Picture 1 (cartoon, rainbow, N blue to C red):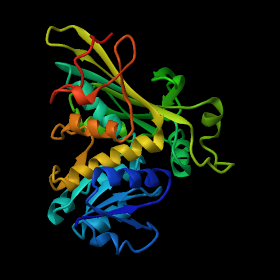
Picture 2: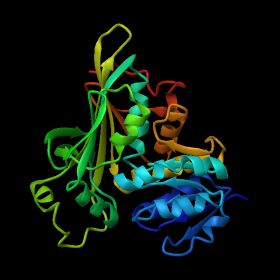
Picture 3: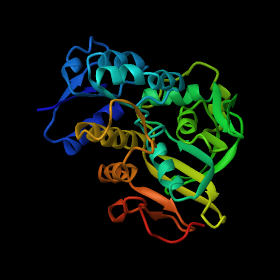
Picture 4: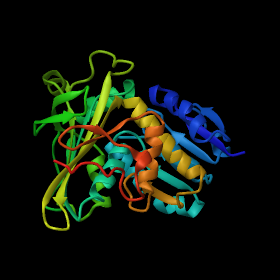
Length: 330
């Protein structure tokens, strides 16, 4: 029997545990304290790293034991370090998924799904609303105080976080929120996946107090979990006839639920042997993106696509290339 280690037992970790029973019912799931030696995890086939702190340390240790790893971190520096584990992962025969949460993670899958519908894509824009547990709330606070990575004219740039206000419309029931540039990992990963895209940006919802206090220590303890969160992924480009198109997809759901469903879907892919050794990022063209999105939806996340009138994406009726054959995008 294969064994899956679950490192971390916060809001997202608890929801991953419930979904692993659905995604890999024949596997033994072992709860592991990230503050310990990870000795028990080193005897597993796969480890889902869902602790709130940096994940590079646990991931590197587990890879050295030949354990495949699914990482949920959304911290820019942590994700950058995790992305550099490709060579040791190949050496030890371990599959490593970097950015298997809501963002990065689900956002990358949605970006790939939308980009594949275009003949040419030149812009990708993300917006994120909400937080999961306390660690996620602290990360949101940090993201508004750092340097926001983006792509302009095909080159990676950074700008002050908390700048660039834009009113972004998320799927109902979330609706519209002011969003600002944030120190988020998704643009860096998307730039690697889509090197020919000229503009990539990521914003996070925030109010005036969030922006004013971002560079100060958090004065009150973060909440256990926020309300309904959301992501919005927008791509711009042209079809084969040269007609300009803007395609939008998104999700409105608890952030912890989105992250858990995405992490569990990738864990299932590793258990089935679908991923090669080395680092893989959500949105990689080698992935079965449609299959992963189907799993995410089966695990409790409703995907939505904007076509003039928002409607649910129906992965169950998708072909191998597209998720719907619905109305034209508007």
